[in-house]
Length: 180
Image (cartoon, rainbow, N blue to C red; front, side, top):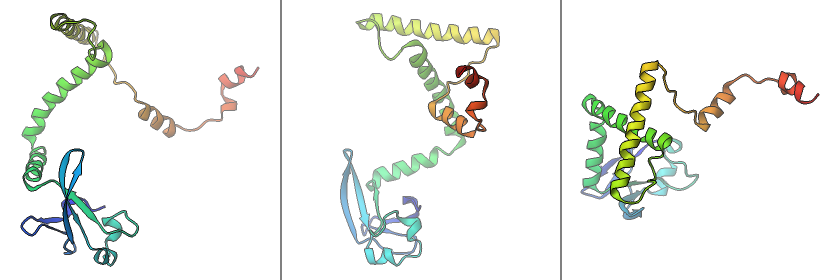
């Protein structure tokens, strides 16, 4: 499927140009979740005759349309996405990912999402004690050499069950004991 990046945007003429050179017929503003987008629609006759129609649109008979952000936010978004591919950005992001993992651990294992107390001072004490509990857990794991494994999600369990070889349930020892 051809993505938006395959299309060229002609901002001056308010048109989108497909990889085969077809120009969009209409250019309208579109609201999606309180954000303004610009929608470029292509002519139906030009899209039907295109040899790459199957890779361009999932529509059975309608033409392709693309929705893009207005020029300034789109340029900022493209710049940020290019910057995210640099090694410097990825090194900085590993620090953020580590702190996000710590927050996630505290939310899941120590109940950080909701405060047990009213008032800012008591809530602060709970957060400090939660952080202390997390650190004690990590120190204990480090000194004993115990590695905490990540929890198994339902999707991972389903994939593992689908990948494992199938056995006949009537031949398992548990099944034979159950029916006796």
